Amino acid sequence: MSISLAVTDDIAQITLDDGRANAIDPPWLDSFMETFAEAEKAATAIVIAGRDGIFSGGFNLKWMPTASAEELGYLLDTAGRLVCQVYGSERPVVGACTGHAIAMGQFLLLSCDTRIGAAGAFKFGANETLNGMNLPLFAQEICKARLDPTQLTKLVIQSYMYGPDEAVQLGAIDLVVEPEQVIATATSIAKQLAQLPGGAYGWNKKAMRQATLDRIAATKNGY
Image (cartoon, rainbow, N blue to C red; front, side, top):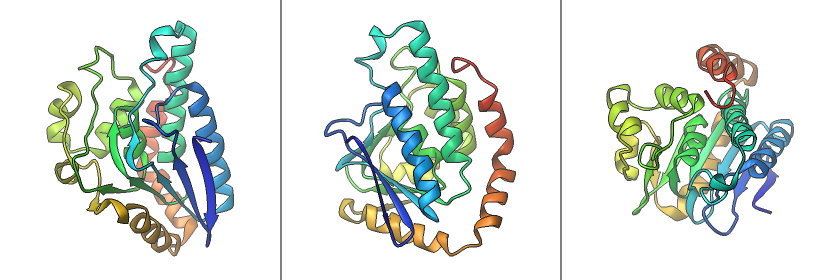
């Protein structure tokens, strides 16, 4: 399975591992959202972890040219719902970014409350302009919500790619640790966050993020 769920000591870990780039297409989105909903029911806090060397490379660019307009619309709408599901979850969500996080991979990471990145020659960024793609509204909104607002032209419009240390400065991740420590650090933080009063955590999270969530939810076919 490319997406798996394990629950230990009331912490759910969703692991993304297709053995390659964790490329995202409609079946992947459906599977992730189902797994995330299970994690919300089964645990007090959630860790989303990638495979060794990569969190996700984003949408499956081999599949997209073969897709119909209807399929592409479903892809973008479902990706927007996924961002809302993670960003609006009442549970604490910690991203264990084990390597590269590109495009939709980065947007998923930005949706997590706290993001732990791996030290090394890894890349982060929204490369839609470079690939000749229009940025869907959910991606615009999550970038505006989480990244340094003074750097959005460079980061989003100009497809600037950057490494882990710069990612901390730009708001893409919160902490860089050695690769072998990423998941353990994320799990430790999830356990700490799980000790906070859950009702207040969820309420305050929704209160701070509702306007962004509403704008994403109002879109159709990604725009």
